[in-house]
Amino acid sequence: MADLVTINKRYPECCTLNAAAHIAESLGEPLKLPDSLQKLLDEHWANSEEAEPDLLQLFELMTGSTYKQVHRDNTYNHESDLDCFYVWSVYADANCPDWCWRHDVFVVVEMGAGGDPRYSAYGAAQIYRLDDSCLGDTGFLDLVLGWWAAPIRETYDPTEIDSLNDRLSIGYSSNPYYEMESLLYAKPIWSEKRQAFLVRFKDTPYPVTLVPHAPHYGG
Image 1 (tube, rainbow, N blue to C red):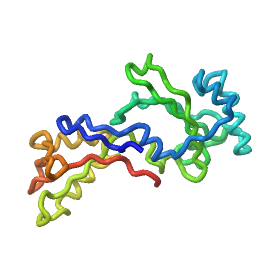
Image 2 (tube, one colour):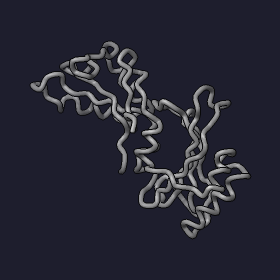
Image 3 (spheres, helix red, strand yellow):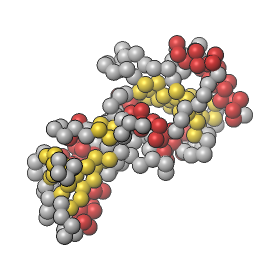
Image 4 (cartoon, rainbow, N blue to C red):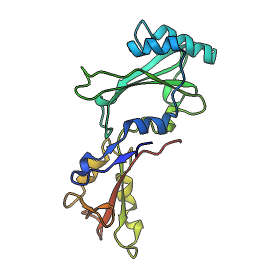
């Protein structure tokens, strides 16, 4: 599998999260579909009138319940460090009160091919089943990188930057990098020796190393 995080040593704001690896880590392996349904998805959107009836029938055969699409979005519409945008949809049982915390939902992912997402070609839908977990616990909904600061010397007290690392974590703000940038004296500088960025924060008593990290996967 490709590395989850690609570091841009010159432009730290351009570090990226590998979209394909992110999907695999959070959702696992896609379902093997019947040939007839796969052919429809090769040619049509998953929610099209050509493909969706067969897709819903498959979900009902697998679960014994009636399913419907409860959410559809494009990652391009949100703050994201992904290296590729994609359309994703959630299918849950018809009486689902909250798809984010529902077991046994299906997630449909249609990967973009670059360029303007309004006109880009999108790949055939991949279907994932979350039968034993909730989407909100998988890490799939986190589209940005977090950042982790560590003392540059072992003699420095790491607890002095605990609150700082909280602010750089995924979920504290919509974009951890720009949250971090507002706290710095100057832009991070890459160190080959330490394989990390070197920075000095305004409210810390010592310089720190800084590295981006992927979301936490698996609850």
